[in-house]
Length: 112
Length: 114
Image (cartoon, rainbow over all chains, first blue to last red):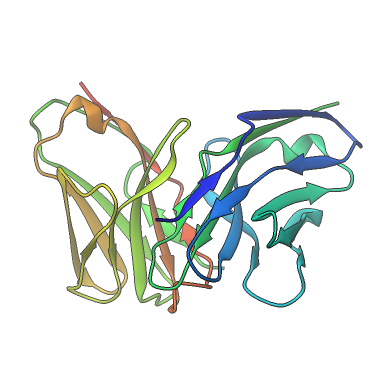
């Protein structure tokens, strides 16, 4: 069975500081990894994905994520957080033949 | 832009009622999905469909059914609503293959069962 862990329920960061949201996964076979963001009272929006190739993936709104196969991690990062980045972030993993599995979500609060 | 719409943002129903949640997408996607979102549990897949009149069970199908009569529309049905089905319901769609194509989500329906 595949699974995703987001170890932090909430991350607090000051505006302008680096933001990291952690994600580790467990799958059989090659993983396909995704990050989604949910702003208040809105549906999920796709941020970025790793399918194959370069381990550093760049996505929307200045976010990036690094695929680390040995540590089975796919942490989301942003060099300089904005107040508008405050939202709920979901990591998700899929292996061939399986459905998408989401983590529990991490709430990010960026303070001015 | 892909648009996925859901029929209601908020819904309040009574225990035992039959509940219909409607989802429509306008990008001619083959794949459609229904999830429920609960705090700390993330999103859990209820049902999905790869084509018209096709449906497959997800991880938590008990107490739910679905209907896909047209490609753009995917309905979730709660046959007899119960209080433990109070949740946020999200619909999504994508192009195949679903393995590496992102899903596009609707705004969600917050259902309360009293």
